[in-house]
Image (cartoon, rainbow, N blue to C red):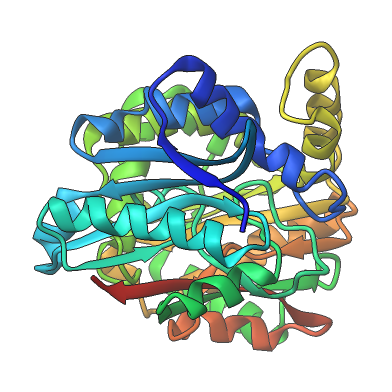
Length: 373
């Protein structure tokens, strides 16, 4: 067996190796979507979640060559909310070698145990905003830019080391130009007329800092009780997300629903797919990466449906039919051909809405694993 060595990431050089390792591991994989290195560096060293989360990173070396990486995290807000003592792992990448996977996961487990944890689960991010879930179906498909991809052997490695399924997320791919299902259209028309609901001006909302904050508070509230393992975001996290996301949101493929008093009650946010552009970027905005991304943001042929939600009092009322109809009409007007949904927990009744669409198929299934330590 090779003389593998595991090292905690401490230096700038090691952090750079940590970020770059997947580029080498997946260099011959046409489905893999590289993250921008600058974004990864920010997430690992500067993101506001680190003001309350603890984390450590490790690399496994075979001589001088990196063959694996992992990040261990503890989110005290999560443990307090769910009355657990769980750590989480993320940024898990490895060659197809059980010895490397064992070094990575057992090191993260030992660190978690030293910090009073009795379970570890993942792959996850610090909170619900980041990439999560190991691909277990759909390896032939390219994921949206905000989703993980991994080789099939990852699942064999973690299960061999005692990890079991905690939960699955599912994503669907559908024809974007088919329009809304007739039943959705009927429900949308009924609710719109009965409660005097209407589409809000998204471009105006973006200019109003108070409304942007309100949007993210509604985002927080809408997922608080309906999303498994959800952790409410801090104000700093919401401001951070708003600054990074809102400039790219536009009403060509997104919509917000307002009530008769001009209060935001529901939303559906989509983006043009930038996965192929990120492949060309190879982790860097310069010298030409920004050009690929700019072109992709103007191409609505393929879209990724990122966020959908409603304020708690409007959940389970059928209000989602309104933004589904609005977005379906926009997809058609833009000549969009295919749309990929955001990951949704398989047990969430909201996933049933995709059954009302024709030309809709399961695209990717991803899994969160868990282990007692």
